[in-house]
Length: 395
Image 1: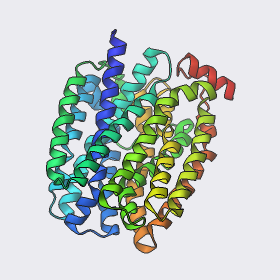
Image 2: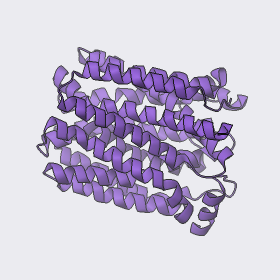
Image 3: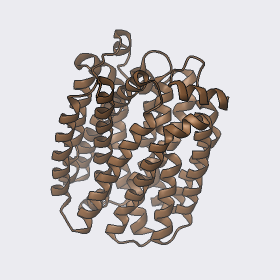
């Protein structure tokens, strides 16, 4: 196995670790809510904390990568993010939960941009589109983490023990994978240019807005799917936890097919079709009053938004020669939805109902269909031979 192949395998495992951490945490949100006796508005306000800190730390990724090199930066942030699973379940009050979630978001902000930039670098060296597959590994990690979380919930395991064991496992995988990552340092101009909020260039802004809508839906599903199943569909705690498992499963399957779909249809068509499927999933969630149709709706939602964010990051990374800065810009806009989504869903649910909140999610997903045109690759894009050929066909 050559260096590029080892680097691809390593960054694939890092994506999986990231997904597993988020999947495990998502299944324990109801436990946190019950322990602290939080209403929907308070829970939504708490869940906004990770997005706040992530948006501030994402632009720091270029500097951290320049100081440490991409290998050490990605490994370190993956370890810290894994360990950040523990403090939220140890919190004994809403303010302490806020602080714990701020640390959780800060770690994921830098880790997210760094690993996506690392993926773009491997993609460039590999010569064809691989980003959808990398995010597919993220979804497999989410399936693994949420699946174990559902089993732990069903078995009545204390969330503090569950997430501590999960964190230890993910730290070990991060360290083992980090040894084989490609070691790249961004240009000096890129590292010094990122010290606060980073907005994408005008050409990439529409990409960021489409990513915003898809990430809003992903955040809503991740943070509220289990609660939706319990409160609206009347599911048990174990079945409710499985809703995110279904979401992660379908998302992962489609992401592994995403690179092939892009090669056949081009990015624009894939985004447009994906948006249409996600709208159908959102409608099924809103109309579902029983566990089966609601879980099916979340599964369909996972199919629809599966490749949108990976292709947004890939498109951003191929704008210009500064992938860290471009990805940080689009990621900042995209992850602003994480800042809005938990509080928005909680506020709407508190004022009206969770069904109304997910109707808003469905309306936003319609914007993915409308914004697909923004993903037409520029003439200078270098997504790989197959990807570029498909873009020419779709244009």
